[in-house]
Length: 377
Ligand SMILES: Cc1ncc(COP(=O)(O)O)c(C=O)c1O
Image (cartoon, rainbow, N blue to C red):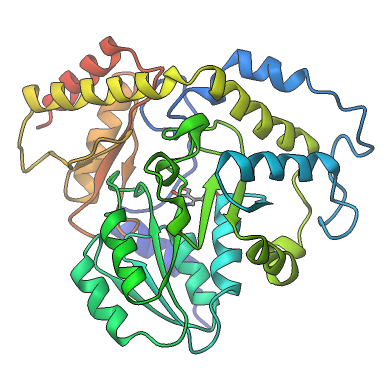
């Protein structure tokens, strides 16, 4: 019998793509999804500590599924608050964005239905589609012609799955065109707002609310572990959809609910952001600064290609696992926490440094990072 475990690990080693856990290292943060610095905010930390735990019995863990002992008025109050904030009829909490997407997409589309997902969709959206019994097809990233060709052949209920900000490329979906197509072919749109929640919209309600397009969507998934600096996620949609998920979404039904501390953290993070909404503007300024300086110092360079992005996700394509790893290591030695994204996580030839720009990155840090990058261009 062959040992596929060691065989697979050896294959990874040979391809230079072995994944390893690295502890955070005190370097300047150009890697986290903490775009607005909320995860490190002492003010938010103190706010979370100040919540009144006396109204609930289970103050440490939630003790079970929401359908058994794990429900609480705090969870339901938070869902009502989030539904209002995200301008949705209803909302349902999940333990993480991964689980929320998996749950939603695996249980809503039925056998005979069609799921059309952007080819750069996050793995949890794809996993949800693979777990469902529906037919599923990728369409080329942000390519509405390809999407329309596939819509023409789609059967029964059709679901289009997109992200508002793509996690590896940092670009936006062409919302207007996709909504038009969905209307023309009577398809339902599901948007993963993981990398837009907090960064855009009143009180951090996300890109679709910021554009006033939320009413055209079947469902949205907002996650709290990125710009909101905490943890968890919510599915927003009609009351009927939420009732359906409570009844049929297995990753909702058969798991221990979020603990009270997480509920308070999410609640506090949105209040904190509402009171510090200028963080969204600071984020845009820092991104603009990074972009302009990169263009000035490095410019168009095939060995180090900055993909066009106006979001905090700034991918710098450096083809080849070995090269991108060696540049990331050199940047780390110079004090910057930049990590390589290797193939097969991204397509071979599009290996990259995925630089995240944060409100807590100073202009000096950004300038120094670009000087270091320029040495390898
Ligand atoms: C686009 C996208 N959706 C969903 C997730 C998963 O969210 P969470 O980290 O809350 O599980 C991620 C995480 O990286 C993501 O990038």
